[in-house]
Image (cartoon, rainbow, N blue to C red; front, side, top):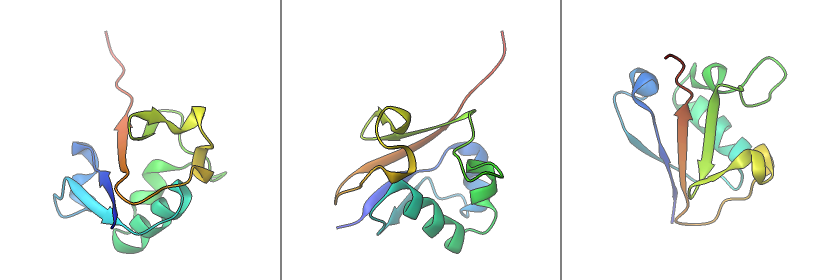
Amino acid sequence: MAKKVRIPTPLRKLTNNEELVEVQAATIGEAISELQSRYPGIKERLVDENGEVRRFVNVYVNEEDIRFLNNQNTPLKDGDEISIIPAIAGG
């Protein structure tokens, strides 16, 4: 069984407007790499030049922020749902 990645609206132009994408990855880092191989350009929007998840991008596994888990080393299991949520600024 695959893991599901929920793609936010601003990134859907890279995924052919797909809102939900399935990956076979074992960790968040592998999921990002798998997305990059299928949708070139998505990784640079998610991680910085040091390979860290950008501070204005929040990634959740089953509603838990990966920053409070193991970041990109957070393990994934079948049926997990990954949500990518860009931070919104304004006032």
